[in-house]
Structure formats: C-alpha cells, structure tokens
Image (cartoon, rainbow, N blue to C red; front, side, top):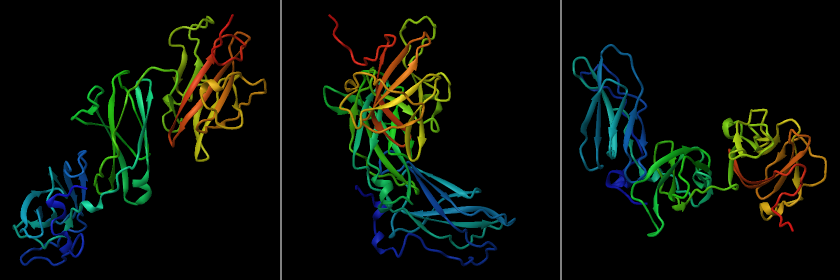
Length: 377
C-alpha cells in the first residue's frame, strides 16, 4: 500500500493511537473534552481521503464559549490551531493531518486541558477484495467479488464502494474519470441504467468503520447487452418492484404475443406474476404466485445450459416454492387464460444474498411442452 507522511511518519515512536489528559488548564473553569473520535471520508484513492470529521462529547456548561481544534502533520512537528467551532464536531477538508486534539474555551478566553489525541493510521485499512467477476445484463452489469475484507475483520467492516469508468475497447484502457456507482454491505451489486453496447470498467474498495478505504479489487470491464438471458431478480424483501417475473404478460388479452410482453420483470407482490423470488432459510427460493401456476425442478442436478431444458416434464406441478440453486433448471406450468397450458423454463446462473440471475425460455404455442427451438419440415 502506498504510504503518506501524514499517516505513517514516526508512528513507530507512538505509544498508541491516542492519549488522554484529564487535567484542567490553569485559569480555565472547563474540563477537557472527552471521547474525541474521527471518521475519514473516502475519495476513491486510499492514499488521499476527501476529508476528516471529528466528534466529541457535548457539554451544556454555560461557561463554554467554543472549542479549539489542534493538529500536526508528524510527531516531530508542533501542534497548530486548525480551527475553532461552536459545534462538538469539526470537518477538516482534504488530506488530514496525522494527529488531532481538542480543547474547550470558556467565556473568559481560557482553554481547558487537551482531549485525548487521535492518530490517523493507514495501517487500519482493510484488505482489498481479492477477486471481481462481472455478468453482462440487459442495460446493466452484475458484479460479484470476494468477501475477504468483511470475513477477515467483521467488527471493523462498514461497506463496499463500487466505482465505474468509461472503457476504450480499441486501446484496452479504462478512462481516467471514475464515478461512484453506489455502496453495499453485500459482496454483490447491480450497476443499472447503463446503455447497451457501451463498455465500462469497474472496481471495488472496502471501507472500515473509521472510513479507511482499502486498495481496489482487480479492475474488470464489461458491456451490457439486450438478451433473454441474464435477467436479474431481487428478493422481494429487498426490492419488491423487481422481484417478480411474468413469462408472457398479455396486456391486450388478445392471445397475440406483442413486443414487450415477454419476459417482464414486475413487482413480486403483484398477484399477476408467474413467480417471485423470496429470501428463505438463508437462501433464495422461486415461489409460484399467479393462479394456475406451478413449478418443478428439472432433473436431479445442474444443467449445462438453458437449452438443456428441452421438454417440460409431464408431471404434477407444485405451488410450493423451490430452492434456487446456481446452475439448476426449473420448469413452470401456467394457465394461458384460453383453456390451454403454457410452459416456461428457467436456468439460475447466480444466487447471491439479495438477488439472483437467470436465463429463461417460453413456449408461445398453446399446450406445447417444447422449450427449445426446433427445425420443422
């Protein structure tokens, strides 16, 4: 990890990360401020935080006028006045100094003794995520990465930050301007509202509870594309609006398949979806919803591809939810509303904590159990 002087210079000579002083200075009627803490503001560059927020215990003493904040850039420097505030917080913009303490100032201008001293130590940063994988979606990219920062120090983990930038396919280079896509506590994220056919680069960092940002995961590029595969469905408890799926939503009730009626992602709480995704027993399940809809697991194990689900089984379909397992296939039997049954196939490609990714197929021919394209004479 790249070091900066304000973080690590002469840290080896420090007895600890903070010190305390409970002595009131001569002439002051105020006790030293207590419980000085700090939080760094991540910037995307682990060596250059965007700023620092200090906070300490508030007191309601009528003799209190303000607080003074002192800092120094290294243990060999003298402390200098960084600022004065009437709030029990202080924001220091830009790269912070190495050490800080606070004093209380009474109405006569006398200062108390110093608070505990806090030291900004980059060695508290979490490890970088070791891996990053991506999946192309329709107008989006699904990201998953190793959870080693949380697993190594769960008590100090705060969140992951997801960054993206333009990608030049011809030059095989990521752009210089990176943007924050979002944050998450799970080792997975869907970057949405992307333009199909436009590639982007992605990188992940881990942030500790103090605000230290790790180095980044490996950087990957991917391109969203339209496809009947790689559909993302969230668990209904997490994001209801995109937790339900309807193979064919015949909005005109004319029995004719129109553009936009196939493979519709909908609210999982709607009674009109064929099935919804639910969190259950530590995993995710596919739960039939619409009246006349049932499901069966296809085969007894993973299938190689969506095309492996070739014919809907001639069995009794159940309304009981089935566990979503990566690589496994599922077949849904549905009431077409015209006296004929319809069949749809699903192959789950990824199961996370909050969402899954699946491929799907649907037979529009009433009552036909064939779920792959066939050549007809």
